[in-house]
Length: 100
Picture (cartoon, rainbow, N blue to C red):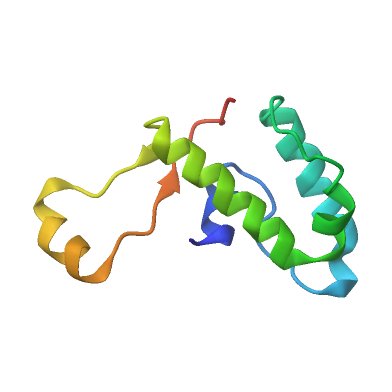
């Protein structure tokens, strides 16, 4: 999982959101994610994600997992199969605005 690259794919702030001093930027990211993923149920955990960048990264990981399952993430090219089996693949969402 590469949270900053995921945010970059969606044209969301991908730098400077880590650390206790950057709560306002995380709140902005949460607001934008809520807009582009209207079905996303934060279950009251927005405040945790705003105060802890690791919690926000976990939500990003879950969103990318959902997109992989829906076929809305960039798969590895077939010619990379051997390398992917050995080293893995960092899945990223398609660069179009997400929906869900």
